[in-house]
Image (cartoon, rainbow, N blue to C red):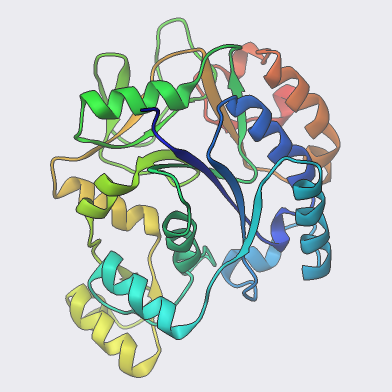
Length: 311
């Protein structure tokens, strides 16, 4: 039986400048019959560094763009993230074994929304992309199928993603964290949340994650155990959550699990750092080049898109 896999993409008002280009691109390049393709809409007020992002639009614009993507057949469902207290309590207990108050981390990233976007899909597997990701995939190839087959062979691989950056002839990756080469993939204890495939059943067995905090100004508070800080936050409403990907990385470090980056050059991703007017103007041509497998030679091996190389 073919595994059922859902595509999950989160969108917020910060994504308005590019989402009508990137989301059809991601669906086109993924080239797999997902059981469903879902846009999860973050309706919460912007916080953290999200407040200063360029091109922030209105909720009315976001809903209009989401409706357009659904009407044109790029996605199947539009779902608002559930911020009800009862839902937060239920899923936080499952995912953390505790119920912290914040729904977003210190940067404004939707931790509760991320959990929601996994829990509320119908597939056995979930592919997640951040809405600004760019993907190349060779015709007739599927990194998702390759990833599912690898997960079935290597159950310690809890998360899998395509090659990070266009391929280099020597196979080298420019990474800030340690990794190990394996048979057809690279192993990491560090998790990245921008693009990944997971098996929902295996992920459930990986839970609960440690609740990690930051943002306390007093040094003695920073030294307290995370469980106590969670209790303190519950009663005071103070303190900021660390990143979800850091919590997963900590759990990977404490278990036998790994995150894998596929070494296959038939699929690769780049992530734009600069998303201002210069990037938005160049984006259609960047997407055309990526979909054709074309990229500046200096970009090879680098995951972060160097805009100056493309314009």
